Amino acid sequence: ATTQRIFSGIQPSGHLTLGNYLGALKRFVERQDDGIETVYCLVDMHAITVWQAPETLRQQTREAAAAFMAAGIDPARSILFNQSQVPAHAELAWLLNCVARLGWMNRMTQFKDKAGKNSENVSLGLYAYPALMAADILAYHATHIPVGEDQKQHVELTRDIAAKFNHDYGVDFFPLPEPVIEGPATRVMSLRDGSKKMSKSDPSDASRINLTDDADTIAQKFRKARTDAEPLPGSAEGLKDRPEARNLVNIYAALSGETQDQVLSQFEGKGFGDFKPALADVAVSVLGPISTRMGEYLADPAEIDRILGEGAGKAEAISAPIVAKTREIMGM
Ligand code: ADP
Ligand code: NA
Image (cartoon, rainbow, N blue to C red):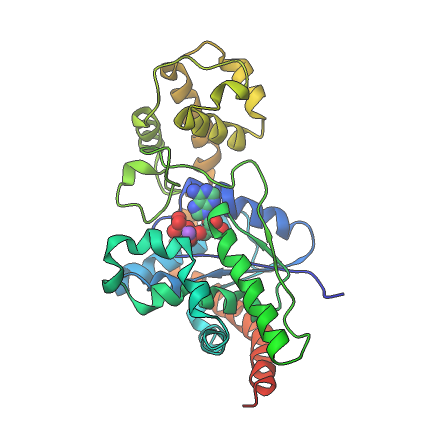
């Protein structure tokens, strides 16, 4: 049996959101506390698949590192590093580009969403992104990948690439990683459009809560969140056809650690005029301390760089031999 190893990443392509916190960061911390080896990566090479101004990217990478630590990732217990500092990612991505099939890439829905109608004029990197993600995971022989729902297809592609590599070269080298999609908030939705996920790359800042938002901004964004005009039902069953209302109740529940039914039992018959300020209070009570700690880390950027550098050393120690072995298996 392979030893369990957790790997996951977040793009430093903007301020981290409440969706990243509930769907990813919070769960990364829980995993760290399970006592399994945890490897967490700021995937700046994924971020550059769409334009990033260099100084902004540098700043956002430090901000993302601060968010990880402020949320509870301890660099002494988890490996926390920046993708571009560890050469294994780019190298293995090329090797896996030669294993992945064009037809598989063509089925990736996130590429279709992100490229939209403009697919002739997006970067080749945006198209190849899932092979780089496969490399991120396989370079560590990672076995469990905690992600939000939007990443399920990419982790499945990683399994296909690993299986094809093992089959083509007649080896049992890459373990097939399991997507771990669990918890109450695997898909937090936009505050402006109940059919879209909340994302740091959404052009509308009002669509999301950023971990760096202050209390007033959080309250204002929830106040303006799109909803219907019905009062809240007494149980989650009554939210079935009300995606915006369901999203807000779900955010409340995920933040407070209650079930949706428990939340609704407190708000049955109330309107959003009552619910939204209460939601803002819960969000501020959870996010306020995180953003305060982020500010403390960000006051010392050299220390963040030092921590990321140390993490990169540990990441390289695991991944370099795995990539060297991959090359050897392939005859290089
Ligand atoms: P974004 O779309 O905000 O740029 P990333 O692609 O960097 O996010 O994803 C980082 C992690 O956060 C992934 O595990 C992803 O599944 C998770 N995640 C992103 N947005 C959400 C969301 N709205 N709800 C739950 N999880 C999310
Ligand atoms: Na994403």
